[in-house]
Length: 406
Image (cartoon, rainbow, N blue to C red; front, side, top):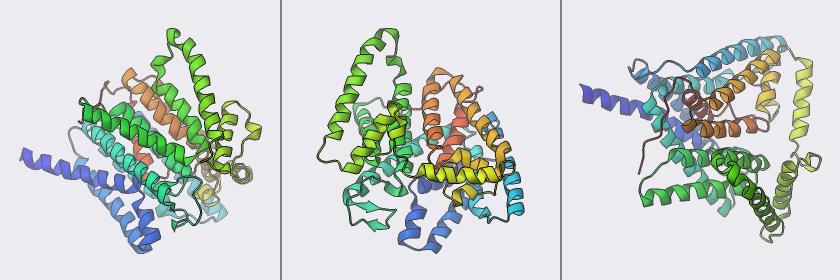
């Protein structure tokens, strides 16, 4: 009987890991573009079905811990978002694709049960590293063969930026950064072969990030590196670093700006990164995101209290997750979401040393990209990371280190 239960739990794990990997690799989008839209819908429904069935496997598992505080705050947020947003929909008669907007909520609920078991969090870490590394490899390969999901195949001109399986450079940059954080912090091999695999994985993530030429991604990378290597910023080491880091950055940037292999567009994006770091923001190109943001602000001003409707900000391409919530469900929901992010940051900062800096790094990536993307809380694999982070930074969690895999 115990062996049977153990086998069933292993099967239950697959009901979550398979949808996680399929969504991280955007298999549904590939089916939609190159196979058939009906097959794509079946795959989406199949993933949801797997998640719902998977909950049954762990619903009464004795290893389950109580829901973390952040999970409960998410549930309150979802209640306000859909309650106010749907009311706004009825008032303004704006169209709402309700099933589509409920998909992240279903994933959130499913992973809240799955990741309430510590052993499953270790499995989740492994799956994220494998899935994101595979995504990064495909990103590099697609860039080399000039394949673009955004253009539905081989592009006739050389790609300026790599979008990988996501068809978008900024979404790809998010995955590259998260991949680096997970591999560096949670993969702890003992043997030389495993250490070589770790170095290769980190190299693939960073090279993929460079190919995206994401201004936001490159700026966030500096923040992530600062958190990751915080031990180097001790009083004894800070003075040499103040000389070494600026000189190294200057040489790297000048080398890139004068490189004959980079196009004018790629060089301009690197120059924009320099302008952001030096606070010369008036010279930064925002790729029309400022225009889209101003358009969304106009709708916010029209209906600041109730918002316009669930999914409204996505429909108008607001490209801002945080203010998009205001556009959708009004100011009270917007303030609640800010409180949610603040609680993540506060709990991460107050967590134990072995998870503090990795958690803050993950949170930095997700939060900063919310200002330029509308997909951060819509993607299933990123919702899973929010749930994972909620448990990891919970004050009640004991300090842990991931098991050695190799």
